Image (cartoon, rainbow, N blue to C red; front, side, top):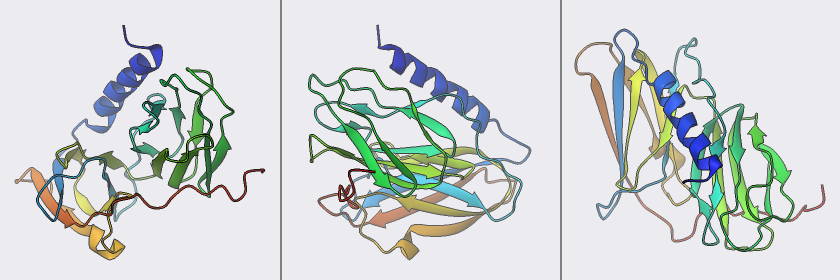
Length: 223
């Protein structure tokens, strides 16, 4: 049987899809594909859809998300959550970890631990949170906290479909710690007309760096 935190995460994902994916009148799906210049899909790219008009609220928060630690790595490497969401940081490794962030969007540290000991951490400000481990410098993770009503991360093949997007104009942006292209090339504006075709398709071809950026900083460990 899977650990309790995985069962909670699965239940939270099902609830979130049911709430944010319920189609409204004239709703469409936005299909995004991200590939590197050689043609391979790029996974774990965050996609956000920000409406030009007010009134479209972020999805309801169904339960804690999961940022696990396995084989001396954060899993997933990149996680997207809505503002106000909580994240659990279980340690599935046989060694201890000490997770921290000094990012402006969230300062926190979890004292040295193994297993599933700490309560969830709530992320109540939008922005990028860069994670590190004070024991293993090679461990780097990212949590993008967004107030976008529609968001997600691409699968391993580079695709993502944002479902049930209400009619209107949207700014679609993509982000990954591996993408080197200038930020201006990573945003596009689309119009969801509320009629056929029911799918808006977008594709980005991007260049990738070998190591993710930004890196976690430990210049102010005592705070």
